Image 1 (cartoon, helix red, strand yellow):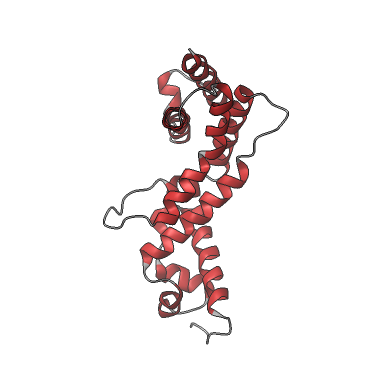
Image 2 (image 1 turned 90 degrees about the vertical axis):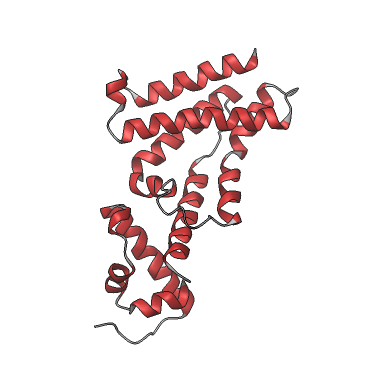
Length: 196
């Protein structure tokens, strides 16, 4: 039986997000329901809808928190040159995807196409490219902003693709046994070609 509210709305919101993330981590996105969250935190479904407008709003908040966690892991090392930095960032991305597979996968889940993601979501995605673009700018200072943005996104599409294949067990079918080695080769080869 759900107990009477003894927490502020902010506290309930935090409890809901923590419970929802725990469900996604343990069971995947398909197990995420408002009823399951309500049972886990000991509140009613109505209490959840007092702090989130709907399920889409809740899902958006979970994705935003995951993007924040991912951004905090992508940390360049000032000791490295730009190529080493890009390899490091790619390796950090792969590590995050491995360690937080269900949350990472959830960020890119687009099964609910009836709702657009808010501008905040797009801004956080753009911020993830900041450290990558910075390295490309150092590699080729004469390149324009549009070229740098495209290079960062093209490279990261490849890195992301390797992550997806590795984590869904398909990388071996492509004849690749070491995901980190594949990511490092992709980054190094892309940089060489881009600098020409």
